[in-house]
Image 1 (cartoon, rainbow, N blue to C red):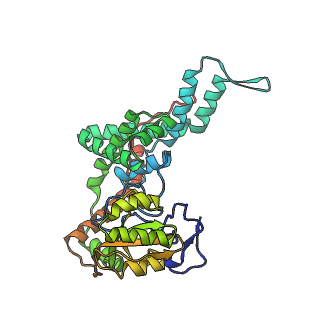
Image 2 (spheres, rainbow, N blue to C red):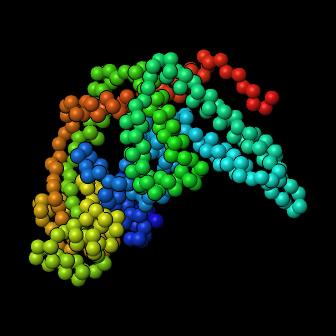
Image 3 (cartoon, rainbow, N blue to C red):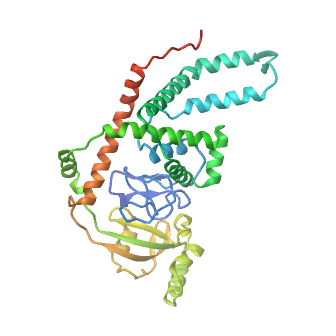
Length: 364
């Protein structure tokens, strides 16, 4: 568990054990503080973890991760058509289909029948699932009327990104099996979300005044602080660190030694790579050493609560003030466009539903 003794700066945060997720130098405090290996600037090393903010987590097959990846990789918005309830209902329907008995359970000699189970399913999730199915039908009808299509290449690209986000093909397979989803189900959901985006996105406009206003309000955050890109090797004793330093001075490869000897297994798999980070992110002794090094230099052993570190600084970036250049302008425009799209999609769906001729016959 990672805790704080108060409300001090990030360097004051500590972890109770070096075996937990906050593996070597960073601990979570306030929103936006990061762990080793979580990239945080443009031009960063691409990292395998799904979440790009907050703590680095081990991959695990969860529906939440799949659905969050689905949102982030298509609309980047909270889309109303994520079929969580449909998945739950689908699992129950699968169990019903597999059962050949009219009685699905006995409770102290009293039966629960298939019909009773079906009625409860309809009562609990039937209306929600039906509402989502109606919206899906309306979206596809609207796309057909307007001649809007999504290419197979776009769908394939999103599926590949989702697979990477959840930890690879085996993790994705586990998630889908857990919730009685097929790969085709996921493909259809991606297609639907891309289709919805294509229908609504043309309505979104971002003005020059909005871009400039956003820039002025976020000028400090948009600037680049002083940063270093570093690798490290974490060991338990100073003697181990000194021995590895001698091997490095003899010409051995830092990344190879990190993979073999570092007890920070998260970064060790990447040859000790921590990516880019600024001040106020690492614990104080680590930060002081890292920012004192020139590119290519390796530190002497640095002691922290986690053990002893050898730090290699590979690159440095000097601090610079934010400038509203084309790159920044484009990034701000995209951010504002996505925010507006996120707000507009639920409204657009409500409007679509209100104009449609829908007759509900469930329960009749």
